[in-house]
Image (cartoon, rainbow, N blue to C red; front, side, top):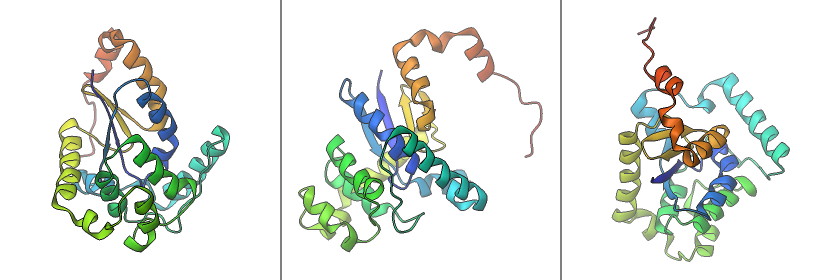
Length: 208
């Protein structure tokens, strides 16, 4: 069953899940698919957590708490939200490998460094073997690959990041990782009668 991880470097929740995705990728094939979270929000006409004042405050404190509890380094970059487009393109230009994703995540969330200008990520790009950064970031095939990732996410029904897709089934957020792993190892969960019943529940009231 194909396993795909959709993520955006803008998300500290993606950083929190990343060690477990990296561990999973060491034992089976996992497609790493960076997407632009802002484009997803626009397509679905919803706000991100950092665009709702009190949710922003809660989310930042919560991810710090989770990181400390897990013993995982987490340092917020100079500004957040920031424009992650350059980091996403850099990821694709450098191959979107486990090592590439790891390096970019560590740069932003492990070290708390900016990644929203070519100047800011130039040293990172050099470490990934990209010397002509501006050419790499503006390459048509890089832009097309990022757009293709987004369209694949929309076709899959994504509604947030990070999301682990196991076949057609979506597991949103790092806190769903254990659920996803059990689903992966025990396919009979998909045919569990109560699992089937709840997804077909009729809507009793709607605000629309």
